[in-house]
Structures are given as C-alpha cells and as structure tokens.
Length: 359
Image 1 (cartoon, rainbow, N blue to C red):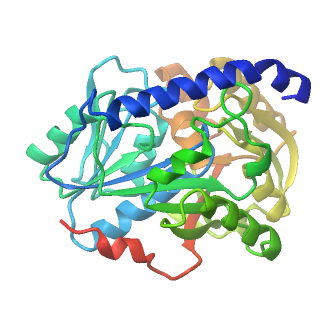
Image 2: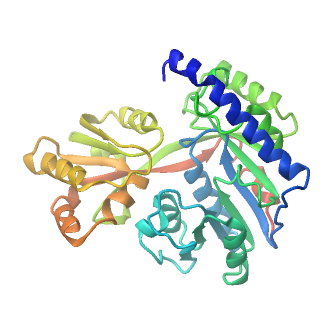
Image 3: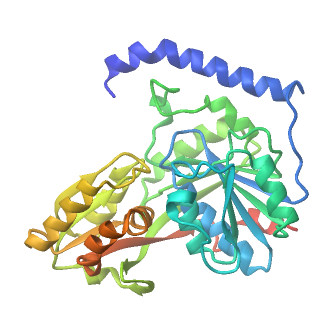
C-alpha cells in the first residue's frame, strides 16, 4: 500500500480505532458480560490481520500439553470454511479428522491432523463451542485460536504474537494498515511472543523491537520464536518425513495462498531451491479448477519437476473438490511436496508459561 493511499485511509483508521475502543469499553464497564469456562483457557492471537504464525504456535502448545496427558481442545472460528453449520467438530481427539477441510477450514483441519490427541471444534460462538468441548469431550485446557479480540470469553492466559519482520513504527490501524487494535491493547496480554525470528537475527533490531513492545506492557512476559524447516512431506504419504535435501536439483512451482507469501518464499530461498514459477492466491483461497489445470499442465509438460507449497495450502489442495478434480490431481500427486515447520522457542526447550497451564 502506497503512502498516498494510507494517508487517504487514515481517517477511516481513526474511526476503526474508536470502534475497537468502544467495544472494549463495553466489556470493561460490564455492559457486556464475559463467560468464565470450567477449564484453563489460553488465547493465542495477535494485533495484526494474519500471517504471524498463530497456527504453528497453537499446534506446538497443543502437542506439548497433550503429551503431558492433558485433554486439550482447540476452538477456532474456522475462517473460510464452507459449512453453514453453527459449529463443526473437526476432531474429537481420537486420532483423525471427522469432517472435510471444506467443512472445517484449512487451519483447524491442519491442527487436527498435526495433533491427533486434541479435540478441535470450529464455530462462530466460542461460548457455545467451549461448553461442548468441556461437557462432551472432557476438555481440561481450551486454546482459543486467534482469540485476542474474542472478548466474550474470559481467559487465564493471553499470548499475543508479533512478526519480527513488522516495524511497529510504521504500523497503522485497518484499513490504512494491518493493525486490528492500537498498541495499547497489549496491556491485556500476559505474554508477548515475537515470531519468525531468523536463525541469525540482528541483535540491535531484536532488542529494540522487544523494548518497544514491552513499553506497552512492562508486566508481560516476553518470548521469541523461530519457525524452522524441519522436513518436507510428499502428497502420496503425508506421514513420511523426508529431508529438505530431497528437493535439491529440481525445478519448482511455488504455490501459496497465505497471508504473508513472502515468508514462504524466503524459506524456499533459504533452501536454495530453483523456483522457476510462482502461483500466489489470497489467504485461505480455495484453489479453483483453473488453478489445478495450471499446475497440472506445468507438471505434465515438464516445465517444472514439482510443486512446493505450505502444509496449510496442501490440505486445501488435496482434500477439496469433486471426484474429477481429485482424479486430475492423482496424475501429478507424487510431484507435490510441502514444507513442514517446527516451532523453536529461543529461551528454553519448554517455554516457562506452559508449566503454569494446569487442569
């Protein structure tokens, strides 16, 4: 967005900020009530629209808590889902998704496949879905995916994520920028997490960023996180991990429909892949028949040797559409790969806040 366009949108951003403040005030004054759940509630959210890494953080926390023997439920809105049902149980924690990715949305489906022991429920009302998670599925810990602005639910812990690559000094409220709330909203956070920190960060920049964010809430704990490429997976067998070296020496079509495609493309550069074609679509987009024909034609013509994408995009690519579309993909499925990330907390192997999450 150009500076001139931002200047034109600044008045609307001011009105947006007033609306956000009025909404928060209505809860602070008790005009609107908040629901206290009979479980430990952890919110994972952010100040900006998309792209800070909420899903990998949610997956990491849910997996760690599940390994401790806690019954975890992840509650999501299911952004982009095609189901009109008030809520959908994506997984009951028994080991596999109970619905299609179209019914659940891509991120809940990915969470359900990544953490089979977790219950995952999508629905507009998390007051409703939390009751279902506790009463029917015995949830002891609720994780509110993208929950920072979901004020109707009380929470015991509020994690707010900030992308290392975003400069707070230039950030603006919607629609002039990507901020959902002003920085003063960080006063509600119990923990501020800087994500996407490179393996070798700029020490001065990182220190300044942490100092700036801390200035809005000196009491909040601070953490830094990196998302490192752990392995790659091939579409025919998603349960089998392959080394990233498997991708070397081939020409790739890079496919993504995520909020920040530049972070995906940076990962491909880090792996020194020969990317000869790029397809990007808006975040959460459902790939069209035209998209499928385009990537299939590129693979069948030999102009590229394979398609590389993200795990979130892969579930939308493979598990949506009619039988004809799936048959078309089956001819090139063996040439489709996805990067799989691991979440690395810099301070310690197990972030300290996790020890305070109890049933």
